[in-house]
Length: 308
Image (tube, rainbow, N blue to C red):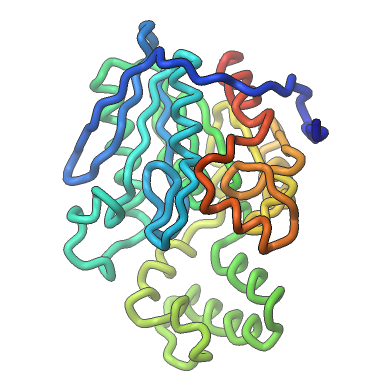
């Protein structure tokens, strides 16, 4: 069994899902989600927020990747006795009709949507609300938790600590120094409030005219700054083979919020499954829904929730 690298020592175990919860489809303002409710009564509900790109409530992508990672997380939490709400982001999957023109989406809308779902859970009678955000959903949840007395804890799973623009430059640097320099110039211009039109054709998927407004709104926030505005228990989770968001990001968030609990899972990748560092083999797991979640992920999260 692989080692578990963690600031807080926890037991590693695989959790068996029992059908001791029910699910129903829910909707607010054109956004659709799934509410998993344990058979035994609970006052605790977890809002599970998906990551960047065309990722749906289950952790699957419209680009053709099916891994059911977030569905598995939800089922484990519901089986452990907690209500869980996961939802399709605005413009994605069954929430696609909530947006007439995808080019009009701004990052703050994702945050407002998360706040609306929190209000939904409150109105359903849940007294203890917990936010768990994966990848980009970590920053969404971080912002939604601010100034909300109903949110009692925050869980960041594979979340960035650095500004999204800086992350883009860093990731491009691993492929091409020239592209990274091009991106740096354009990102700095956008951060200053300008629109850009001179960039490599290889970067059009990042800097195209229809994308720039969203990217600007996203780059308005830096997780390392935003996490400092919280005053609730926080759990930071990352995997050692995450080739999208490295463990240095979780460690940096820990430095920004020293009271946070940090768990680094050996061998876990970005979609929360066991995978090697080799990029090809790592990415192959993104389209394998039969792979279980990494050992230690759910026991670590549930242990954190139980201590609240």
